[in-house]
Image (tube, rainbow, N blue to C red; front, side):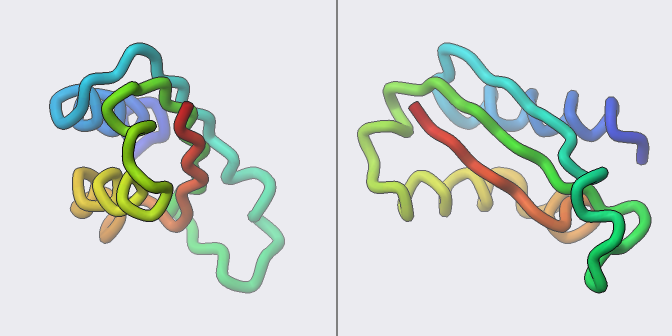
Length: 86
């Protein structure tokens, strides 16, 4: 899968699962290419989410919900997620 397709899927899944006012998804894979655990075809993403719904939860609970919504992508295409919720 290419990064643009993955970003589109992640954005759609999050918007379908939560009330989101704004979302930004950045590919940060290039920062990790020299790491031992780097796997070709697995991406590092930074999610910046503006959501009243998610911001009312604890950080742990909101992150759990995001990971659950993206469980399939986490298994196949995402190595790491950085999640910022406002």
